Amino acid sequence: MKKVPQLHRCAECSTRYKSIFNQIPLDEVEQVDVGKVCYSFKRGEVLFYEGQMPQGVYCIEKGKVKIFNTGSEGRDQIVRLSGNGDVVGYRALLGGDRYESTASCLEETEVCFIPKKQLLNMVTGQSCLAMRFMQHACQELGQASKIITNLAQKTVRERMAEVILVVQETFGDNEEGQIDVRLSREEWASLVGTATESCIRVLSDFQQEGLILLQGKFIKIQDRKGLLKLGKVTES
Amino acid sequence: MKKVPQLHRCAECSTRYKSIFNQIPLDEVEQVDVGKVCYSFKRGEVLFYEGQMPQGVYCIEKGKVKIFNTGSEGRDQIVRLSGNGDVVGYRALLGGDRYESTASCLEETEVCFIPKKQLLNMVTGQSCLAMRFMQHACQELGQASKIITNLAQKTVRERMAEVILVVQETFGDNEEGQIDVRLSREEWASLVGTATESCIRVLSDFQQEGLILLQGKFIKIQDRKGLLKLGKVTES
DNA sequence: CGTTTGCTTGACAGGACTCAACGGATGTGG
DNA sequence: CCACATCCGTTGAGTCCTGTCAAGCAAACG
Figure (cartoon, chains in turn red, yellow, orange, purple):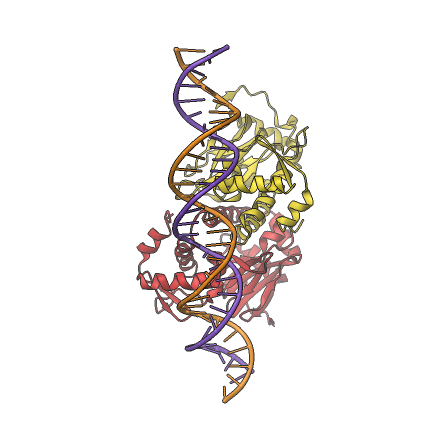
């Protein structure tokens, strides 16, 4: 982790209009600049660990982060992937809990750290920020409820199909038409909630069935409809 | 469902101090009375169905409700149990979504229905209600993340042990020391995320191992520590 | 260029689901 | 109050999915 000389201003942040700070009055947004600190993380570096007390929130300026829980057997379960403009770590801070998950960077990632005091000031202030966080938490809660049902009822094949689609929606495609995130097989397995070996087998099955194309670390979707059907996704 | 002549006043509600309306100024609480309607539901009756647009929220005055998703195979997955003082259905309303779950009563239940317009007025108003909902949603989100990891990594036995403990914490014991909620085997299975038959087998195993006592529909915990250990619960 | 890490495949065992059958409890209507 | 139907709980048998272990190979890395 490296502290970055503060040259990023929220008002000019490219991700502002897709972030939770969208539609917040400009003067309030500029207020964020005052206390924040910018950091740069390498792949594998950690924003926060499960069990810590939150000291603030992290706004991702550029990069990708995985949020995961470590089960009792030590296996990881990724519960969310976050990218540009996402605010990470707000759940524990606003819920008054310790972190229940660990956040680790999937690639070179630049974040702005907003200290607890400042965020709470803004949230409890006049602004509609509390409202925005509330809506956001409620939406995430809806997604979580879907994940729960999927894990309990779908097979590894079905879950894998759905996860591939969700990850593509989250990060989109790169210039070559591949899903724009570099995940190891183990990380795909952590998303699906299965063993690495099972994950590998299912992925190569999918390729043989013409659903996807495996290109090293990257995956290209070949038959979107096939995946939708296989994953029994009720497209929203 | 039966409409109840409105004789319940929020300010005098016995559940108010454990509900989300705790610490809300009295005059605002009294404001709720204006637009609300009280209903009475029998066991099996439904507050709302998955897919509907939310028209308001339900505050449980007395009774118990299960919130569940119906998977693609038709099997149900219970994602939450709610009781006295809980507000049900706020997630979809505040998140701006349709209901992603169905809410069905486990026993005779009396609820106060607060219309959408009124709730939104209160939430967007000066009060700290948005803050309360935000905190609540964040806490539920933390629980959901735990459930996800459990479902993905624990065995049916482990999950069952944990679920028994969680349900007891939710509803407590009745006079006879049994967990104070009447759930069918199928509903226990829906909580754990398994088949009814597996659920039955595990429950009777637990009884033989001296962990619990099965008394018809009711369960009595005999060896709390054993369940904790088996469920690998990191007591919070 | 050696070492480590990640990927892949095979073999195997066991947990969990499905199907089927049956007794008992519950509830309804005559 | 009884007969009937339905639902619920329980048990057994069989199958298959999925995780684990082991080993070989490729890729990445310093």
